[in-house]
Length: 302
Image (cartoon, rainbow, N blue to C red; front, side, top):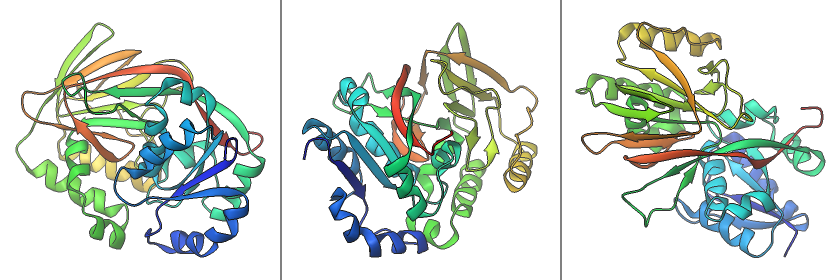
């Protein structure tokens, strides 16, 4: 099926949007090859297999985690990122990348973007695991983090997420915050720091609506880094207010920013890293930017 659209989706996805999509998915079989996932991480394998047989357009139907898996599958061979365009049908909880790209939240209108959209290019920040060469690299389209938020992501339970949506991340974050602090060391572009939370941005948003990186440019060949030496109650309250109001998170005391084309993250004890809201592996990692390697479909005029 070289050149045809391949649609990667979770046949057991829940939620109103997902149910609507699944009811209509068979009707799309005339336009796309249907590739249902069967397990966690399967979307990355399906994306790699589709690219290997010559697919030119992949569509990720799901949340940011599904999109991340599809892009990470393409990252297994750098030439696939050049050869394959990616569309998004946002069916998840946050849909941060879709919001940033201006993709409609309605599945029918989002499919129209696949049919009629235009291509935009974005940087592809790649997470590599130097001490675990057997682990495939992970790519993030929008955001990655180590420290408090990655620990919280690892704590999120699916059933709670299904029932309460984005609040599940807030509950997990509170639990992680209440535990003894665990520190991350970040080094890059001549900068070095140890902090409770290190966030990496390839876009402006975090958690759906919060503007975490106001100056981020996903086409500048650099990843934006925001350092939180510690996360106290004031920081948590500021984040909650920014999330509720959809406004930038104020820069707190001791917070710092820098940009880098390459950086490393490590920790004294095992520490997770999250990529686009999903657990991605354990530190230490190297992050390097592949400039303008992502080919994404967006609405005309974006």
